[in-house]
Amino acid sequence: MHATFGEPGDPEDEAGWQQALAHLEEAHRRLERALGALTGTGLERLIPGEPHTYRQMVAGLVEHDAYHAGQIVLLRRLQGASPPEE
Image (cartoon, rainbow, N blue to C red):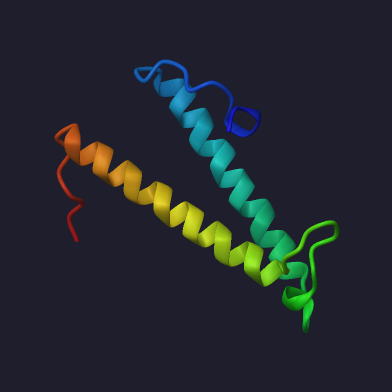
């Protein structure tokens, strides 16, 4: 984790939080561009040097992000945040 996002830092550091959010957004944009470049059966190809396909990697990333989003929601609720209004 530290290699990707660095040390957790001060939880009151709003600038650091915004920087982490920008980093995450850019990582998602790069992933979207890379996936958009795959054509035909590209998702079914094995990732070079890995035992799984691009499709499996994407499924794992979606699960990973959903898991952490759930953690964030739980932590925010424990801090007293209200659920978002629809």
